[in-house]
Length: 351
Picture 1 (cartoon, rainbow, N blue to C red):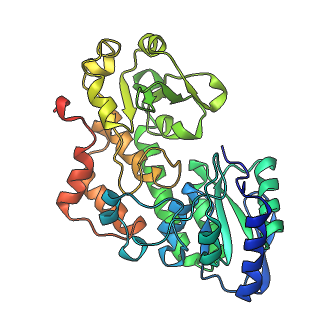
Picture 2: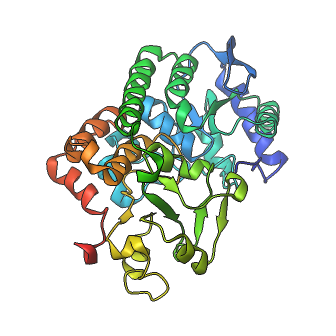
Picture 3: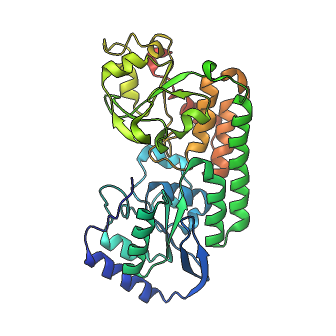
């Protein structure tokens, strides 16, 4: 959940307010964002500041040359999977989200023409965007971060940045990927779709309940989220609850957890572990399933659908990965790099 995180108060507001004045930018054209807010944007936008991790991944995929920096520095192991010019961009922290970490000096030095955020669009978030914009004088646009809206979000960002043709191309490819998976699994009856548990955290006892933005891919990929209820949020569960659910498949971001549960008496009798269907989400340069719940989930959708329903997706996954990374991440992977990403999917002890 995002929240107003300019916790350093008026010092940051004033610093950013001076930023626009010093940039000499002119506000020339109205733009209606996904929250229905009309924001005056400069005629020419060359420097864009993403407010949080989903916005950073979105912006990187469309316009890496216009990024002012990262919300958090890419991990060393992610660098080979990023466009070279972006590998050394500064990290300035997040403007929105729990525990805002924006660095005043870093944001000031970035001199953005516009701030872009991607996520929820409710009144609370629109109000926060208005507040940041009023305090700083920097145009701030909100885009829809829901997975289903990915193609339209690309189109909106393209319209804002003057990159409509490029955005339309990415939107079309995103829609093709989403539609292709939906078509392949569409005739699979619900009772033939695997029951999946998404294990978050080092103990695997945090999960996204049905309806959570963090687990949107489960149903779209042809699975059934065992964690029903919970009002579509993240929450903690007990080992006994996971045992009672007895999922067919476990998906996790943590390789150490995936290895440990194979011999842990609290987990080892679960159906997913007995059948070897514990899958570790590929991580580079951004996790494919969640963290952040951004456009990085596009490749995750195809990956997970292929694991849950291998007979329906005969195309070699390494080829899918290489095409996706070339188009969305601006890097050409060699066959070994693509294979290495996918080898991380299954813990060594399961091979």
